[in-house]
Length: 211
Image (cartoon, rainbow, N blue to C red; front, side, top):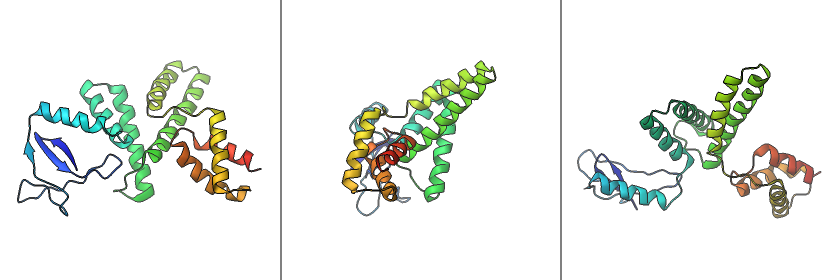
């Protein structure tokens, strides 16, 4: 059971993972209802609610979907047009990928969000190369700023040595002996890497070790 602030109220509701809560407000009362999961609403000061909200998030890592939303609101408050533009683009790209995968109500995992971030970062890298070759350093610099901001969402990457060790360990666990089992190895390796290695690099290592 968690408590969450909104509009001067402190709501109690169940945390269901991935930064999501499932409150349901009854139209006829001031209580949250739903299978005995939710409890009454109590009014607290904004200062107290802010403190409890900070405690809530300090105790549990925020999902990347929630982080994007939080950073977007902060950029709006700070009137940071550059960050706001990138965050809106990223939120839109994540939403589009989520709809493609599971429909409008699908909530992507952190690994799925990281895949979108990497895809957008790759676009910036390609644009930087193109603009630099065309002598448009002004546009290249803008893409570099966006790339640096996107990278802030990515975890520290594993070294080549650690990636290879991870793949070897995964191959042994899966019991793979040929490229025919590459799919199973890749799936397990990506879960084990937890976003600390891009799929292309892992794929190259898997192919090499299964040759």
